[in-house]
Image 1 (spheres, rainbow, N blue to C red):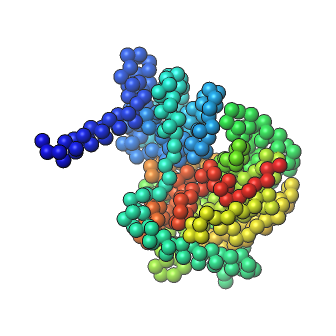
Image 2: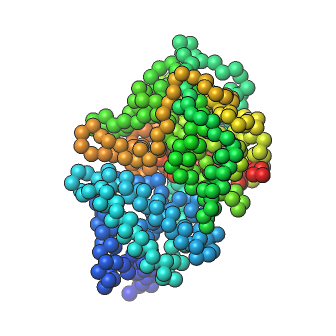
Image 3: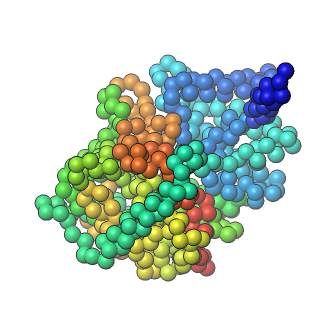
Length: 492
């Protein structure tokens, strides 16, 4: 046998061994003599097979190899090295188990009729079996070590695209394009906002509610963070108060139906969800960022438009669906530290810092680091931002502060999770997002130009957790250290 052939065979066996090691400890559960343990492993295996076959995998959180009952977010991956104590490791595993259970609930709901069985029963089975296998694996030193090592979230950049796209060279052209866009946005923020001819400026406000004092917010956040990982996990009732208290108003230049936002709906046999502008919905979710030894709560608000229309023939940025995701990061005392925004494609990431967030220098002039077209004054109790949004492009043109009831047009706050399983017209449910985290049918022609950046289908709408936000460098909207790298925060 030739040395080359021997080397090839050795490589195949090495690869097979590596794959087998990634499947452990789950492979051990499948081969176990303990009937209950083996039955739970087989149940997960069968459920995963049905989910994959139906194409309903939920992409928001990352699965952990060898631990099919766990999923990990970028925050939990960042907290993993600090989980030194038994209590902290248990808390980390609990949250990873909860992420998987949440994702599986949506996957089970989205299975074709007849394949899911009873949804409550299947979710309860996933919870029971997940807890059983988690306790077995945490009690095993090798499995426990593997769990912590694999609790990572890969970035959303495709390395082969960057290699074959000669990114080391083409990144200079992309960086020049980014700088031109930033210069245009700075100029736009310095001008008086104006609507195009025939457009009507409509202001939308959140639902009215009782005022929420900063002292109460501080108490809520302090109480919510009394867990081994220090994550402010606010209860449902108090969370609704926070979302209402910090919700922004939107002032939108409306020149056509494409400027009307609303709830996402499925049309019969539709590939892409449509926007129901008669149902003024703003989707909310919690997020967290890590700053030094603290975990800070973030409140996230997303609105959806029907499309970004062509501004001219061959507009590579135009396509179905568009939107804005607005996020506020709260200090432990309840005062907003910084706002930032992005479109659901991961495009046009803007930062709006307050005086309690001082920008740090970029590590290099070329990297797409932190673009802030406007700073904000200290946010007084009872104030909230109002976003001026352009027609067509849906760019944020200005952020101001308002107080009290500022509009008769009211929107409703909805959980972002509703988008992960929506009723179809007729039998069945489906997520707005595909197994790759993208919204089908929203691809833009720009993807043919920007593929060397490594972003899959640049410009397409995508799910939370799958939003790469920089063409030059690597950056995600949900990076746990996003703000820590770019700002010096005054927490007090």
